[in-house]
Image (cartoon, rainbow, N blue to C red; front, side, top):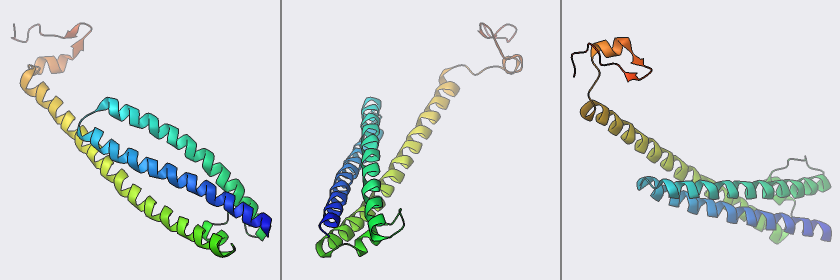
Length: 168
């Protein structure tokens, strides 16, 4: 029984580290929102780098979590990939309560992050549409549009042809 308590405590510790990492991701998503709104490409690059590091850390922790959870499940006679809820059902008193609370917090965090990710995705798409429309405006209004002959003839090795187009 003491060994199982120790294993459950290890599992809770790893879950706590994962929770901290996911909380850090939530902060990064909020920073990303600001960087997107300001067209801060350097800030976005920094955030992407931090996300990669965080992803690698979470993968390491997830491997540890799976190893510990698998050991507990095996000792309890459960399937190897038992859920956190199943493991909690077999945990003693306070450890059970802690696991169920952590599971609940992870659910809330996942919902919150899904909303932030969707919001940031919409902001990025909106920003991209603006840039594309601005580029189109530059091409249509500032650059001379090609003549019909240039469109038919297509670009040459030296750029678009203007010979015989009536333009000087």
